[in-house]
Length: 359
Image (tube, rainbow, N blue to C red):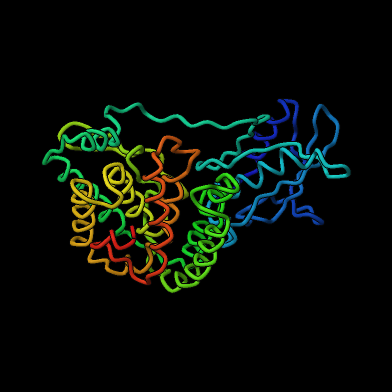
């Protein structure tokens, strides 16, 4: 953590409480250190004494340490501190919270004033949604450029996935999130109607039991941790001039398993193909194989076939969801669930023979 001087701290207090603030002392809880604070660690609370309009006040300054328990990144820790700021004062006998802020990269302390919702601004860029190309292909208008674009997607993924990171705890977290996070498999299953006519409670239970076995299998693959997008599907890709493209809505962090990105795009070729046949055939099978073949030719990552099955389950649950995709014909939804039930049964995914999972 950057060194924080008394001037920065007093400036923060003035922003948070008003100009009539005078800092009188800073130190660790239980021992006032009049030398100020230098290079104190995350998670080490400080006692701050100041005067406001001449009246003495004392507050405790707290941060969080990053750790392997879902707090690796500052935005993880921010969520915890935001919760505490918002909710602690609502509990009987809980010590009140009096401020929420953040430390800027230049060492300045900045207060957050009465937050309710946060927002994000991004640039407006030119382009159209890639799913419109898939709709066009479904209507019979397929072009050579469609296959070149699938190759470009594979090349881009191969390039970003080439950046690796050694951090087994972070890989474990991504697999744990895949199975149990509210945005991922467990959360998606709980969001389905109960009971659901296309997939019974017994079917969901069997799926979950298989996924527990897969979670333990994937513990052996932590060396695969890579830069990922995290939500690379046709509704998050804008196609631009000259077959260029730009991506939107990166999700669930910077690092993960490459199989997440590969499964996310490739399962959408299956989705659109199922609108034509109860198995993957024709132009969408060609697109699917073009994408896979290009990716594997560049990465030689045959190991991905040993880990991708549960990622296909996650993405399959998304595109089969009656909430997210309410207008699927019965045959399409049934085809997706056949795929989900079968794909976990083999240790190595046979990408070249995907229709064996459609039986």
